[in-house]
Length: 92
Image (cartoon, one colour):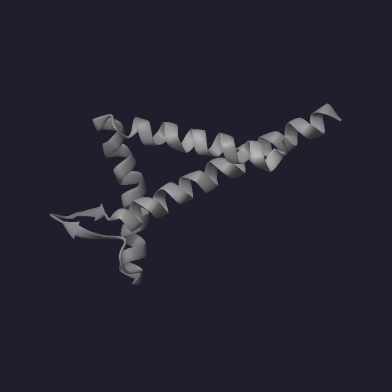
């Protein structure tokens, strides 16, 4: 299995672990703020469909949560790909 495939599997597992952690109310509140602010900024720039404002908070829609999950997956993928490539160089 190549380094990219391994990194993709690890990124998927890490994103799933974060999604499970989001079921904990305090973690959900922190995660909502972490993902809410960039989505709110993008919504104010004119990107439609990411969510709506409710009582001073930005509530992400399904598209907004999907964009947040995709961004988290890409972040984890880059981390795990870099780690795999570092290990490969170290073995050589």
